[in-house]
Length: 237
Image 1 (tube, rainbow, N blue to C red):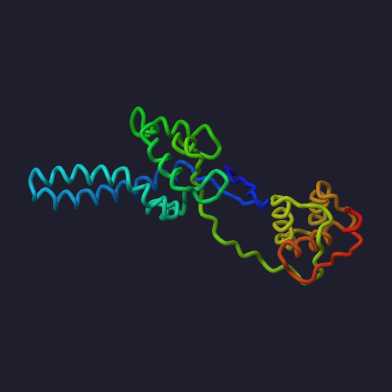
Image 2: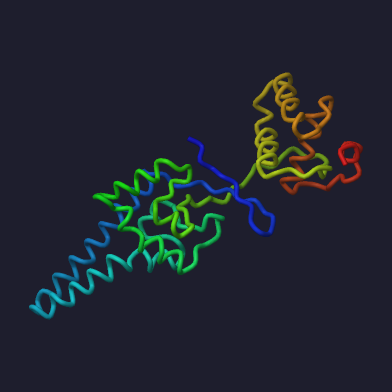
């Protein structure tokens, strides 16, 4: 299932975010649960040597670890050890890093997600929204997303780069780049057919659609000199 979304930042830049689903978040929770359990077990082993005083301190430590573990790590970079292992992190709904109050809220609301037992209510809520937000995420305005690896695109064949005369959205730019990078896989007839399909919503003449898309792709990829005075660009303005 495609769960990638594009979010526009206040600066006018579109960023792509891919929401983490139930499986990856469940694995991350299990890893964090095991780490917390081991940590509490080690502390308990030591403190039990101090009798009643140690038991009292153990209760305090249990509370701090249970409630502070996620907050401590997520405030730093949006990732607990489990989330880091699964390459997911907490972000604001607009894709920016969360602030302290948002992290605190999403973790304080966690008991509501656990009702009546075993995160049942939280899982139900996550299943019925495309960004897999649990109750705590809705309250805090946060989401859990996959870390996007830096993508290195293939170099395109040498040639002129042309600045489009119309504004292209992020999705349209990616569609052009994906087509051009795979153009060598298609026969000339198939390549022209796909180019004609792309040319209609992008206001490109079908007769030179393949060449124009190659020029646009070089511009999007930052390759070669920009041909800003071409007749194609002037005809679209």
